[in-house]
Length: 313
Image 1 (tube, rainbow, N blue to C red):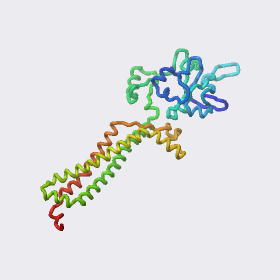
Image 2 (cartoon, helix red, strand yellow):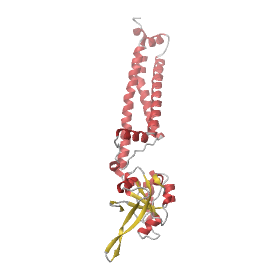
Image 3 (cartoon, rainbow, N blue to C red):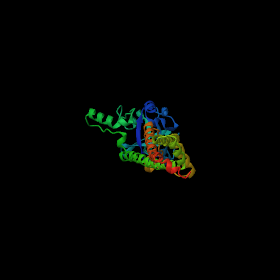
Image 4 (cartoon, helix red, strand yellow):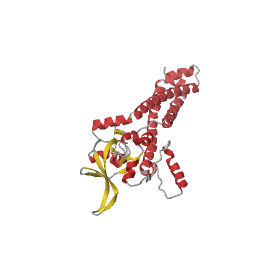
């Protein structure tokens, strides 16, 4: 527990090696004030999440009292173990669970508070590929042979991550339907072109153009429309995705509302990452729909009878 004046807040204390934390873990690169290098053994400095610091009403340079859950027996009774720390930095990770419930201090200071000596209560692993965390954890648990609690980031909020994956799949289906509806506009446009250019088509037929030549003309025209639309959509979509967080923050400041309440959704920002595989998949589906949309108008144009069209001319 942390105490600052009359304010109290429960938190998780994490003893770290500042150099390794800065080089490997993302929180070390999320500091908004101060730096991890200020955490030195015996210096009793502490780095807080910005939401935790706001709740305690304290900033960099202030002091907090760390109250450990272990106590010391005295003639007056059991007295909790306490130590005063100086706030040397604030971080903002975007995950409310960390920003509100995590405090970083030097590993040696944490061991001194809990009287662990050279021992630790746990170790953390940072992987190059976070997606392999479940497999790595399973293999590690088998090698340790039991007696240890082993977990990974996917087990912390499994329902939350599952809902994100489900939402992403649903969005792909919804976007495909939107692209399909847009493809009907291509059908309508080409049908109107066929009707408007029926005399020209009939003249080409009388000059010796085969039905497949007429089909090729409209297929190429439809594909050119589809390519132009897909290219413009990819450019605009990538541009928006790369600047999504900036745009969201601007809308929040403009409207005075918070789209993602960190207390509800665990995070205050929704990061966006452009993945070439997703862009390619959406582009291919859009192009295929455009090609399919041109088949009927092209077939209709090739079926025009020159004699019927030119009968009254």
